[in-house]
Image 1 (cartoon, one colour):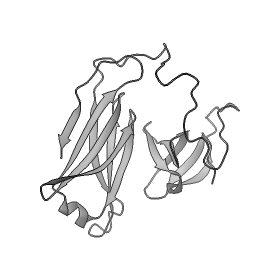
Image 2 (tube, rainbow, N blue to C red):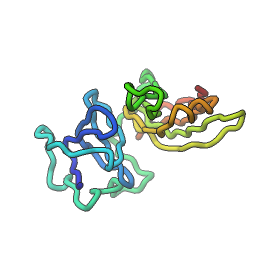
Image 3 (cartoon, rainbow, N blue to C red):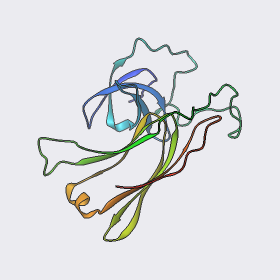
Length: 189
């Protein structure tokens, strides 16, 4: 299925849905949900349910191809930033959450548990997730979590989670344009 910016979609693996707002790398789209957050979702995890009539899309913004565009087009070099980008104020709170949800609450013993990293701030975060098992730290994944979005880390069974002693999340925060540097995040849960 080809999706366009402005398509209304429903999630296949969880309740809810939203509107496709942009396309990410590989087979990922960013879906804006009810509370205004954009979350990255794999194309095979959403179903088309209609078009958002409130979205104004110019002909240039419409995408084509089997998965639409896979990376944003840029005319300027990666090191040039537009002069109109506003600075993130120093009073902007930075809240990052590690969340676990059961896919099927009716079957708690055999339900798959999804792990998410939620970035509830205006800063983007480059994150690394590790886990500890029997005193040894294992690398799990690394990713970019844009401001005011969540990232699906992975799915785990209860037996897998019971073998893990801790999750270790590290991150660096930045904001496009000028910003006040923040200390890196280094948290064990």
